Image: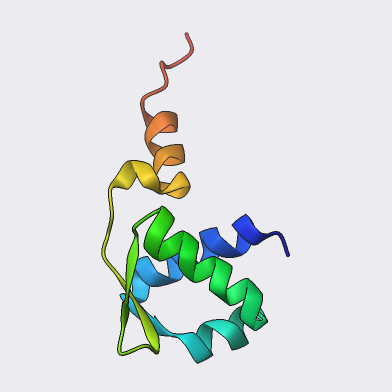
Length: 84
């Protein structure tokens, strides 16, 4: 599966659940250590959407709504001018 497809799914999971263990994420998305390290880096350092807790889980911080690619799609669709 594409890295950013997994990233987007993890963002949704963290938004809904609030937190997830590293082990559960690796199992759910079949990630090896290198893929998981890239995912953590993207979530924590690059996008700043999550923080690490106890060196074993990610906790959603909510980050700016504009940082989430999923958050912008529904907004732009709602603001589109109606066709007449």
